[in-house]
Picture (cartoon, one colour):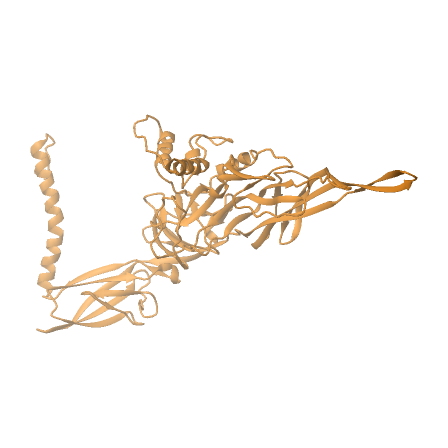
Amino acid sequence: MVALVALTALAGSALADPPSEPDHGVNETRFPVLWSGDEDGTVNTYDEGGQDVALRQLANGTDLPLNAPPRDVERWNAGDFGEFPETNRSVSIQPSYADTSDGEFVKGAHATLFAIQPSTTLRLSDSRQPLYVGRSGEVLVTTDYRVRVPEDDTTGDRQVYWSLETHRIEETRLTIDGETVASDGGSHTPRFAFDALAAGSHRIAVETEVFVRLEKHVRTEETDCWENGTTTRCQTDVDHNYTHPTETVTVEDDRRVVVEDLQVTGKRAEYPDGSGALAVTANRPWLGYSTSQGNVTGTWRLYSARDPSWDTLVYAQQNNTTQRHSPLHPLQVNAFPMAMGASAAEPTTRVLATDGQRYEAPTLPENVELGVPNGTYTGSRTIVTRFPEQVSAIRARGFVRGRSTTVDTGDFDTVPIHRSNLTLAVRNDSDSTTRIEVRLRDAATGDPIDTVDRDGFVVIDGERVNTTDDGTALVTLDDAGTFVSARYEPGDWWHHDRGYVEDSVTVSLDGPSLQVLAAVFRFAVPVGLLLLAAYLIDRITTWQLWPPWRGL
């Protein structure tokens, strides 16, 4: 019994083995990246080689998140699709999850979607996982059946003989929202194309009609006997009746899809130092955008994994059903929220914020080792990014390969960002309290900044205060020290028609003399450090830097 259990477990493991070698035009560098969720090997750190070798080694040891949907998934599926096993009328071959239908003569009939591509399953949460497709694409289908020919009955005066005249896949149709858009005559692996699919949700379905015609031969014997004197005579009449029973069985499979009609709007800004910023908002969840200064990626990343429901094929025959290792391993691109959140490819580019709807984090399939947030997360409908210089155009990237759109940022609303000017003035100072006036101005225009009617605030001595419409606020501090510091923390510029940069200020409560002394101290420290460095360099080199007034 123990040996039997071990053998069964081993067989089950063998049935689930994914491909181990590149095929179908996928090169050896990209091949390991496509199989997230499969058993990872040991990362080999000893092989010499360039970036391609390092990528193969890393993918062999772990699952890798992707920033773009790989074309190799479609290339693999198209080639793998052609390896559907040869079949005949006595066996129906199907994936283990296929929904089959039986008639009187047609048995195990099915039409099963192998792949819709390009497409990406967006794992928003455990309960919301729409399949995104492009406006155009292809649908790969497998379909099969077997024919049951009734057994002959050769006993008695009425004998029945059955034979199969013809059987075929009459037609397989691709329908979208109930309307037929393509058909195929009789292939077990039809392949359809669709184009110009309207935005929104659609039902993609395939329907296969299986036709069978048999011959039923009924041979009837009727014997009539009579007495002729002392002799009994008999005469047997034989009647032959031929009929041709037919049967048509229709089977289907369907999938609800969403066309990724990516559209973006945005705001642009320029900081006083010349750096630029963008706040880009998409009409639906999206991957991010590309600029001349690198990629910016939002909450979601991608991975590619095989569909494990195709790991085994069922061979259904008249008297037995067996399971065999499947030569077919269709791949599917998936989008998932990554724990690290939004990021920029270039170190000089910084993601300031993301905004969007909150979701419950999904659970990834077994063995997919990619970090997802704990609990809830914010989907990045809006991505706000600061760049070292202005960006003139972006390419918004969708989850589906080929679904991108280029946008001129000159069409975005422009939000000016000005420097702010924060000042403090001591209005009353006693032994126990200090009354300070906070004044906040636009450094470029001199206009007061009202933090009551906009995001942002002033922090003075650890306390948040808001300035009014004249840009001022009066604050009373208890037991203030020698110095009082304040800083202005402006709100998000993309929520207003004008933005500001932060400012800070420190004042002394001990009069002008100490203020002058403090200013001298702030100047003397860096100058003193510079002179000390020059002295030390002069002592250990021959540069003759000391004294600095040498040669004057």
